[in-house]
Image (cartoon, rainbow, N blue to C red; front, side, top):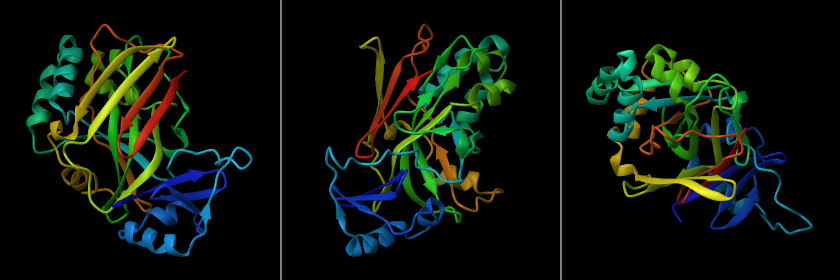
Length: 281
């Protein structure tokens, strides 16, 4: 196999390699992941570790969000559908042309999303703002780069967004995007030997009261900007001592008559990374 998965748990860090789990000796997430040769280092580690077996009597420990002290940043308007939706939501505020221009510009839209302490993991609870009337999840392939800017892994991101607030005025973007419970990552850090192909599909499913109320999918081939391009701009004038996460934008946008409700369950699947599931609180 040309990938491995890292899981941050209550009892340390688990490595999954070819469907076998191992516990790393190193317990500091930041130390483990901030390696430009992370895949090769994990290959070496797996050779000397003892395989674990999880049963009903010895269950797998609770999996946490795959993040240490890193910041989470995000990219906007990287898919044509996102560009169109952002133009529509901000048209009345006179900001529609901003998104069209950034879609075509050399410089991408980048913004700060979350501190590590505000990030929830798989099966955690994400939130919709009490002062927002139109809210959606944004399913995103999320990059992990080391302190030197080397792309070594992926995870799945849920960029919770208050479209009603952002639509009032583009200057309200930080309030629409950054608040407690607005970011989810998981279920693992997918560490690769070769990057995911353009035919990789992101799938979003929203379940309400036991019934699916929305489903959509998009291939990475629809993303206009490449991961390396986004990371280049993020690291251009910024330093990240322990590396950084960067959400790459969404190409799945529910129609304007849809909004999240408390109790909704959001499933985001990117194979072979896995599925990130969150409940809306």
